[in-house]
Amino acid sequence: MATAYDIAKKQDEPEQGAGAFAVAVEDVHKTFGNLKVLDGVSLGVHRGETLAVLGRSGTGKSVLLRLIVGLEKPDSGSVCILEQDIAGFSLDQLGVVRKKMGFLFQHAALYDSLTVGENVAFPLLHHRRDLSKAERGDRVNQLLTEVGLENALDKMPSDISGGMQKRVGLARALALEPEILLLDEPTAGLDPISSGEIDELVLKLQREHQMASIVVTHDLHSAKTIANRLALLDRGNVVIEGKFEDLEQSDIAFVKEFLKQS
Amino acid sequence: MSDRAITAGIHPSLPEPKKMPLPSAVSTATGLDGGLLEWFGNLGIFSWRVLKAAVTPPFEGRELIRQMDDIGSKSLPLVALAGAAVGAVLSMEVRSSMTRFGATSLLPSAIVFSVIQEMGPIITGLVVSGRVGAGIGAELASMKVTEQIDAMEVSAVNPYRLLAATRIVACILMLPLLTLASDACGLLTGWLAQTLVEPISLRQFIDAGFRGATLSDFLPPTFKTAVFGLIIGLIACYQGMRTRGGAEGVGRAATNSVVLASLFVILADVVLVKLILVIFH
Image: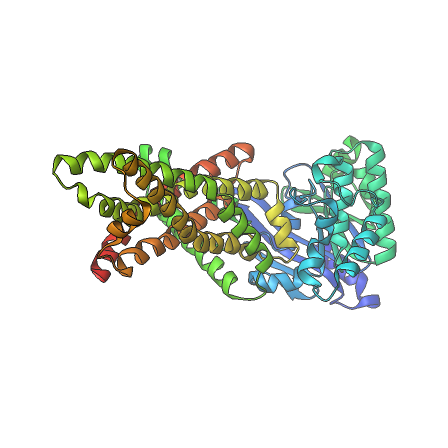
């Protein structure tokens, strides 16, 4: 039986060729103790495309992102980033791949001993040693302006709101101009206005930077707004993958229930 | 959730060593509740990763200097005070014993040798275990539970290099220097306590104390504290970076760092003293 991954791959072949996925996850299994979290998940995301991964809490959405970024290793299956299988990579090899990826954590994970500006400058300081202090400062200002926080440069993370922290996290994720952007619950815990602002920001960044993006969320409205395609996860596997209309027209009971409750 | 799953973020490929359960009193006191073999196995893998990160570029010189300042200069007042207190107490106690045996002329030597060979190093090791061990353990644990270490890894910055190697090397370099400060304060207060009872100039005290002594009497005990630094830094970083469980986990990591670092410093002292005696005497 053809999986959603196969279908997406086939649909893509005439335009971009079989190897065009920026992120390709194939038949990935992951178990923690006796708990099977992912049970044969396959997904693919092209350059310039945004895929939203939806599902109930505890269905392995965040684990999937951690596998993609190499913070976890799959029990079996492959995770290919820009056509390289990262499963057996060492920390240093992963480092090379990670420079091409930006990751926004669910709680932003800002370095609490550094200012907002220093947080954004952190990847530049370590990977763009060719930049002078002034050039680095300009880049940080540019990134903070891009996320609408040009006045927060010297503030500490504890002095800004949750929504602002996520913006700073996003600016930090974009610092090295990544080809792939991974967002873990970008609107979780935010009020509707802040959520809308984050959605608009992600859309704007998508238009400007044309990255391959994966957004993990349980916010259907946000997913509909920012994603080209949606994948719904349940019990460690992809139940359905496609455009929002495909989900609406689905006869699968879980999909209907999820849409009804969202 | 298994320990393997929990530690996966920082030790993605750790094997699962066989568990050897500890008696409950020991595990409560030390926090080695996951099994002795597993703890040592994971510590070995952690040490190897830190060593690899420490000897390969890019080197984090700026962070190393920051850590040396934090561990060295900020521990100095505490170490100096502890050394001074021990010197004074030692002088009073030894004087009482020496008087009983009619050997008060040996008092300066007894104080100098006791302070420099044992009391200064071990007191410095224990004070730094408390202050620095708890600080490193809590700081890294807090970073771990708030995903800051994951964020660092995702930013392609090796946390073993930036966080662990710099702190461990700073501990190794600063412990002998702090020991010298502790020794100096101990000798000064030892002399003060002595001269208050039986006036003697500092110069006479030092001359009498160091008479017949060689460098091998003093250098090995001072430099053995570099091993204490290695133990304190390694255990505190390891406990911090394997933390789980929110605020409670942070507290546990800080406590375990201090308890284990102090315990291993004392055990290492026994081994090192024997080694020094065998090699240098």
